[in-house]
Image (cartoon, rainbow, N blue to C red; front, side, top):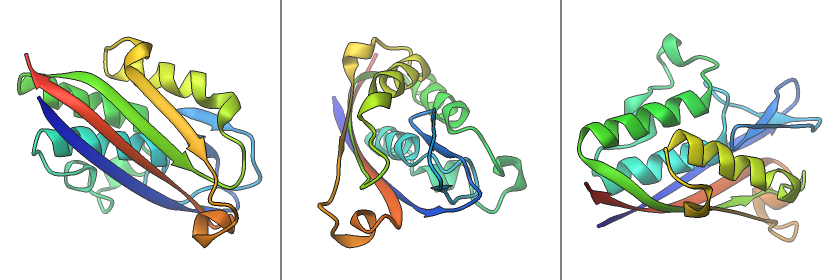
Amino acid sequence: MRIGHGYDVHKLVEDRELIVGGVHIPYEKGLLGHSDADVLLHAVSDALLGAAAMGDIGGMFPDNDPEYLGADSLVLLRQVFQRLRDNGYSVINVDCTVIAQKPKMKPYIPEMRMNIAAALSTEVENISVKATTEEKMGFTGRGEGISAHCVCLIDKV
């Protein structure tokens, strides 16, 4: 078995959709990035790639490549999973934390879990997503951005 850790952060800006865990969340701001800037799915992708010692999401999907401009991060996560599968790995579990002062993530967590489970061809019981605030401290606490951490366990099939 192998463990991986992923972390991502994106700035909140006006005139962008907010997409976290593959879920469109109504909010006056969205995350800035080359792709759809889905901070949670980027952390999941990095955790999986790291566990398999296959680099990171930036290496697999460079932010200066026009092919990934506005890319759907669920599609990218499926490609990450396929790369792991092609190298003989399966996903045991994924545990994530989204850090955002606003908006509240709790209502969207069940759909986030289902999206991640579907992308990784696993049961939703193997996917944990939690959310917390930073008690108004730091860049996330001030509402300047959203971050996410993820750990995962994978195994050779």
